[in-house]
Every structure is written in C-alpha cells, then in structure tokens.
Image 1 (tube, rainbow, N blue to C red):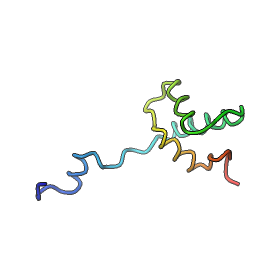
Image 2: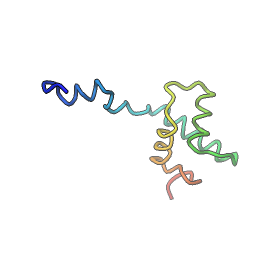
Image 3: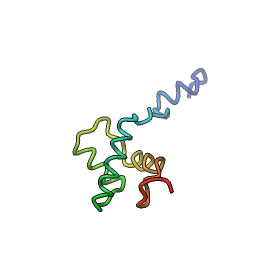
Image 4: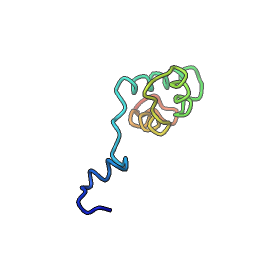
Length: 84
C-alpha cells in the first residue's frame, strides 16, 4: 500500500465509503406497501416488499437488508403497524 495515499482515497478506490441514504419518497413507498400487505393479512416482510418494488420497477431498488432497516426505523416490524 502506498504511504502517500490518504484513507479517504483508499476507501473511495475500494468502495468502502457509505452509499447515499434511500430517498424519502422510496421510504414512503416501502411503508405504504408494508401497511397495505399487513391490512390485507398477507406476509409483509422485507423480502416480500422487495418483490413488490421490483414488480413496480422502482429505481433505485433498495436491498432486502435496507428495506428491513427502514421498517425497523419506523417501527413496522414484528406485525406492528407503528409505535405503541
């Protein structure tokens, strides 16, 4: 490893820098899909929501893990529809 390179340059070259956060619009779409599935009595986990987003051709398509984080951030996990 070259000694003259900064850490930032190293991380950028090796893609270890954080990606941009998912847009608010996509987060709202994820929340709406989750609540719609829940209200219809269907499975409403991150993988199912990912499939719905893919079918709707949403771009950029967040990963299943990112969808799970968004659901957790908004208290929409474990069958709950919001904070208690």
